[in-house]
Image 1 (tube, rainbow, N blue to C red):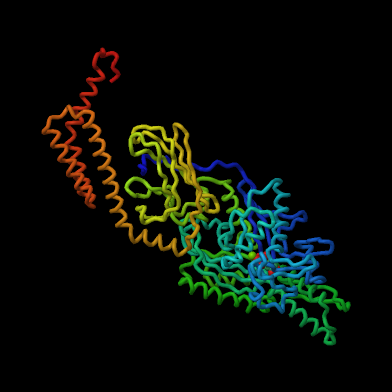
Image 2: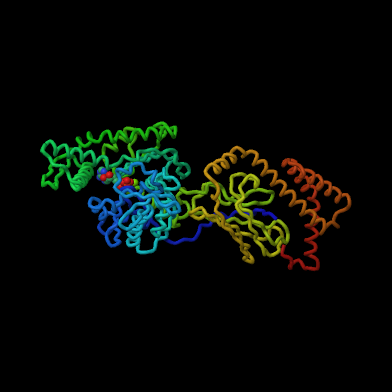
Length: 632
Ligand code: ADP
Ligand code: MG
């Protein structure tokens, strides 16, 4: 039994109320949490007014776990138990970590049957810790900060990851969130989050470059925006280049100054190195807004450092670091086959892009001023918060961000082996749409709902996702029953379809994961064939529709002949049955034109019969009644 569509009442939004949702930028150097309150995105601060949480976890005495600024302080004294830049270890096995010599941690390879799936472990005072567990401590701290600030249970979080993160790294990030007791609404690419923060998803279609210079990493991503969806065209970067290298240049410069002033110098202690690196970072950040920086401190040898670094000298010291970012940009542009004129806009991300000479270099490269009006170290968290707010269902209708979408249309089978699309491809998630269908036959009490995915018009050319039956429809004339079928896809892409008969309220439903088993290539193939087969699909749809129409008319005429055949003489009957035969012959073929013509001929041939039936029913109604009683 199949279906016949009768009307399309449009969208029905899922009901919602304001939910607490957060966006988290889980960074290599710093992490942040943001939310949208009264339509405004805000980065949440800790009780000391810090927005940035250093991504550092310290395992202290007596099972104490310290995260952030206080952990950073321990780095010097207890490097083995103070884990920084854990993001670099996410989803990585021991053999993936090439630069072990420069990392002070005690790495351990996990036993082969370990749940960490081969991910490296760190031997700390608190026992063996996986990068997932360490990241979870950072996420927990941010979660607690958010709950304290927002005063309630969180619905969920959007967590950002670099665009180049592979499945293992993404899964590790999700696992960390789960371990921290966070419901992950979505992982979002960092460059996409930055673009969302700038509202580019509402901007003109085109290509945008995201230049992200953080503490220890440089990432460039080229995004193509089309109908609100960002596609990553290319990524490139340098995983060992960031703001820390600028600090290091200043540190080396200070050492030179000390050497010049005090040739008989003593070796620096570890603590001195740490102190000078901190002073160097402060000087670097100061020089972003000032012409010169005074660097003063006392070393363990009681020697006092007191030097002045000008902005011009700093630029000179670090010019080649800035230049080092150009080659990954060129490569990304080449990979995406783009010219500079193709670039609509450039977004700066990462604290290190605050430096004026970095900005200038980007501007010179792209020959346009980059977008800078948001804080570059907060922009990713802000974008994540905006996305979280949407996914939690706090915005509706046209406001929806077209970010994560149904890759293919979802629909159901109707009469003639055709697919009626209920949720079109590229619909933003979550989405809910309802459509009304009716029965095809008189007295039909069950309906088979066949859920399909794809762009083509024919059931045979789409992917079958699920089938279920709605039973218990009260027997009615064909077309009288109203069956509302609702398709709902939640933020994780889980589809549920329900069907409800409106008068008796019988219901049936099913859930499916539409993306399951479909990889990117399969989706692209299905889309390509929908374009290349569009013409033949149109013909097939026309044919199927003509057949459904014709069969409906033949069946109606048979019923009419049974009821009122006495109104016709033999010649008239013969004429009608000749036309029915002609239409049946046309139906056996594949020519929609021929079916149309034969249907039209049958309609004309039965016009007189229809008029006679009308007269007959009017006189039946009028029989024995006085004219006042008749409500014509
Ligand atoms: P990540 O994405 O790696 O976690 P961030 O985006 O937080 O890193 O960037 C951290 C880097 O930004 C550090 O090297 C920090 O010194 C640098 N930074 C922050 N503020 C400034 C500033 N005002 N001027 C120059 N560099 C800055
Ligand atoms: Mg970052």
